[in-house]
Structures are given as C-alpha cells and as structure tokens.
Image 1 (tube, rainbow, N blue to C red):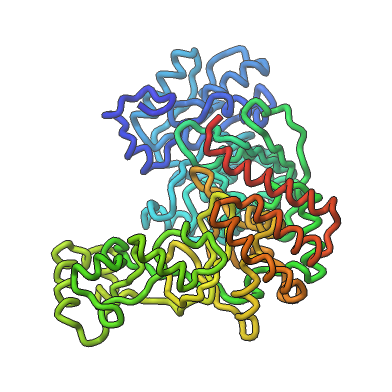
Image 2 (cartoon, rainbow, N blue to C red; image 1 turned 60 degrees about the vertical axis):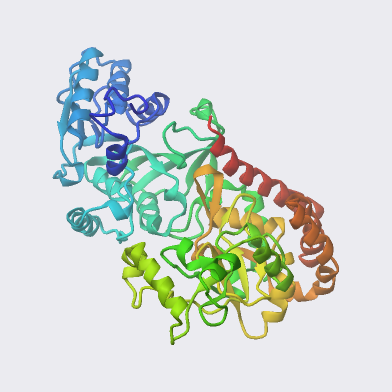
Length: 556
C-alpha cells in the first residue's frame, strides 16, 4: 500500500493513484500548513482533495487547539475527494479520531464555488496536462476566464486547483498548499505566479534542500498566501529550509521578482550573488546565450534503437554510409562532455560501438534499405506515435546541422561542445547555430569560456530540477543562460586558446571542479574584471545551489 494509506493495493493500485495525481502528505507538513492558515477556532476550512484526511485531521486538531471544544465540525470543515474508497477511508479515520465533518466524494473542479471559507489547505493532485481530459480542459478554460488568468493549455492540474480554491475564499482568506516546484520555474506557471502576488497581501514559500516527500522525487514547495483580495504583495517571503525540522524556525529572505510572472527560481540564490550577475549583465559583460545565436531542438526519431545504428550493425544489414545511413551525434550527452566533437573523437565513438549512424536512405531506395524498412514494419516501428505521424514513416525530419551542442540534462551543469565533425543530433541535446560573424569565435572559444561559475550559476537559476537531482534546460531556458559576451570572449581569446589542452584533460578525467576554477581565473578575473570577493561569492553560490539540487535526490 502507499505511504500512509489504509487501502490495500487491489483497492487503490499505484497506477490509479498516479493517474489521479494522489500523493500522500507527511503529517508534519499538514500540521504546519494548517497552523499557518487556520487562525481562529471559528474559521471555516476547505480541503479540495483530501485523500485519506491527513490535512482534515490536522485542521480539526488545529481548531480544537484554538479552543473549539467539540469534535463536531460538520458546519465548519469541508472536504472533497475524487476517489470514493479514499473518501470512505478518510471518513473512517476522522471518526476514529473523534471528529465529524463533511467529506464528500466528487470532483472539486466541478463544484460551484461559494466564497465562504477562511482557509483552504491541502495537496492538489499532480496530473500533467497530457492526463487532463477534454471535458476538464474546457472546464479549466472557463475557470481561467472567470478569474481573469491566461492559463495555458499545458498547465498541470494543480494550477486550476489554485484558481478554483481562491473562488471559495472570503476576502482576507488564506491558502496553505503543497505544490510542485514547477511553480517556481515553468513558463505555464507565470500567470499563477502573477495571480498570487496580485491577489494576496502576503505570499510565503518554503523550499527544502532534501526530498521531503516519501513517494516522489519531484521537488515540492509549500505555499502560504494570506490576505486574499487585500493589498497585493510587494515581495515573496522565502524560507529556505534544510529539512522539515526547519519549518517554523528559519528566518525568511525577501525576494522580489524582476517583472510580472518572472520565474521565482532565482530566489534560490542569495541576493548578493544575483546582484553581481545583474550588474555584469547591465554592463554588457554577460549576455544571454541567445545573443550568440539560435538554439535548435534535435531530431525525434520515435525509435532510437531502430533508426540509430553502430557501424557494425549497419554492416550486418548491408546499409552503406552515404546511401542508406549518415553520420550522427549519438543519443545521450556523456560523449559531449568535451570542448569539441572533432573527427578524432567521433572515430573513437564509432570504434567503441556507439550508434554514430542514422538510417536516412537516399530517394532511390536500395534493396538493403527496403529490407530494413520491411523489418521495421514487422517490428511495428511504423505504428509508433512519432513514426505514424509522418510520411514516409521511416524518413526522420532533421534540423539544420548545428555549429555546437549544449547538454540539457545535467548533474554538474551544462557545457557547450563544438560540432567540428558537422553531424546532426537527436533530441538528447540542443544545437546552437551561431550568428553571422560569431561562428569561429563561438566554436573555438565559447565552449571554454562558458564553463565558468557565473554561467553555471545562471543555468541553475533558469533551469529546473528533476528527479534524481538532475538539472534540465529546455531550449528557451538554455537561451537565457548568461554567458560571457562575444566582446569579452574576443578580448581573452588568446588566454582561452592557450588553456585548451589542460581544459580538455580536465573534462576527459571528469575533473569538472578544477576545470571551472581554471576558467574562472581567465574569464571572471581577467575577462569580466570581477573582484576576488565577487568571484568567491559566485563560486560558493554555484556550489551551494548545485549541491542543494543533488542532495534532494538523497532523501531526508
């Protein structure tokens, strides 16, 4: 059975819980959020997705602690739960604890709102947009229109839950919610971020350096918003907690987003380090990566194991390079942890059996290509989603060959790798095509110059943390990573070129820390003219934020 669930697996299978986005909340979190949002024994409280009543139990306990002598809360505490068996288990659990309140089975998003509650608490379901039905999507659009929020069709279920929960709040009401850290980073959450600051007088965030949810690797944040429809909040109160032990103990930091809807993830870094980056950007010393050129997505084959082949596999099927297959940057990014994917590096990959060839037959199909296509159809490769959407199914659309690659799933941080061998890439990395006049500088010097603490800290702030402590950069996020400007890189080009051999050795041996320190000396000190104090600040902040991301994968 699931964490803190009383239901056996056959009554509530893991797959069913995942489909409806049900993840059970640790009692310490429920207790903390109810204490922050329920301030009077007379407060009316709503829990929109109660599961097996962790928040409802905490809410009733909080009301009793505030002086409510009875355990009868039928006119004061209300809960909804989509899953009938969970709703029954919630009611039974409350009865065992001596509490009575309304726990109704039904879809909260389908409930007509009445602004009659002082507090809404809970853990909204985490269902990605792909799992939202057409009926629910229509309902969400209507909700967004009512609330005056431009909610994206890509929004996960927790976003409309916030909006609908606010429809139940009285003026001055309070929210206490467990939310995915997507709130801080993703583009579709920008209208929600703006709505919260505009609609509440005080908005507080609680983030954690370690994973505090037993069932999921997804990072969570706690949101406490107070003073609904009062004066808008001027800033966020941010409590950066190491673990659950810090709840209610840590002192808050003040974070003011740069603009409406701006990402809140920048608040993970100290204000002093952000000031250094902002100052360098305002001087033109640091510029976003998109100032160097455009970022491109890699090719999507729909079946990498079929379309990408090693030289040995191609030979077994009689596929000839230039006729049936073409050179390819293999899937993954470990082989891109280098300054340049040149002929020598590419030959080495091929010799080790890496899939460095892509099935891309010429217009006049050879007998061997026809046989390979027939084999793919027998394997039903043509029935796979991406394949059946194109015609012919076996022709993979290729983007323009990039000048360089940038890794986007990172443990340490992203790096840029020149594409001297001029091969196309798959969607396991992004491509960069440099602007006119910048290709030579970009391919020869930017891969070294961009491996500095300021750029890597910037990547931590614009990217997002995924399960296992991995940093992910979507193309639009990677485009915003702050790198030394072309003018700065040109000014230190000779120094950068002189350290090529040592930089290559550091990356080859996996000694990324030493590589960054060496680049910092050239880029931050000589190129950007940063003081020793500023360099140390940025270096320490990059290490701290990176370690926070990695530590979250190690649990409590």
